[in-house]
Image 1 (cartoon, rainbow, N blue to C red):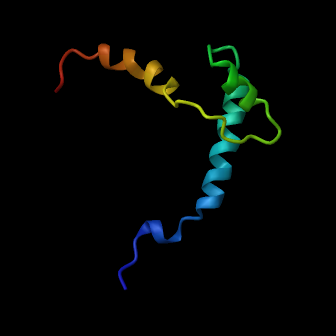
Image 2 (image 1 turned 135 degrees about the vertical axis):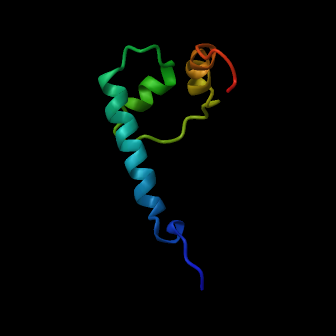
Length: 72
């Protein structure tokens, strides 16, 4: 059987670590203009999904593309 790197990923651990570090970084920079629900999630002792549209990152990364001279 052909194995790849994804066969050995512990997705439960990955999820836990993603939440942990998102909260840790978010708490350090809590005054960066996050939405109200995200602020509550950052400081929650038991963070759960909160029906976010998930567009905050897309809105914040947009200026990065504007800084390029051309597509190449």
